[in-house]
Image 1 (tube, rainbow, N blue to C red):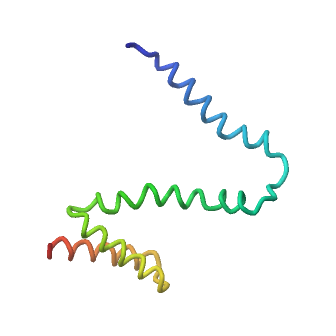
Image 2 (image 1 turned 60 degrees about the vertical axis):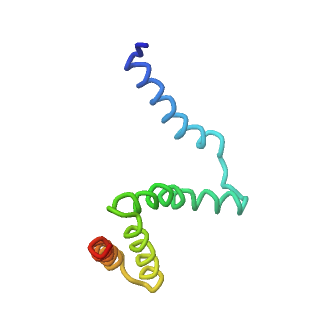
Length: 101
């Protein structure tokens, strides 16, 4: 089955155009619904989490070391550690856990 690259390019352009233009044309005034506003506010965070969390356990040699780093990072972030401190601590946790396991 032969498909033209131009068909794929056109389809990709149409979808990208629709995603960016349709909301602008349909939503001309500010959204008043608190539920919809909060939903739209958290969509980027949820998308990032859905892409990141599986990669945390799959990027290491053993899923256990990735899970330990995840828990350690959450605890450090909860107690106010900076992003650099959290990432450095997670790397150290993975390094130690993989040598111990």
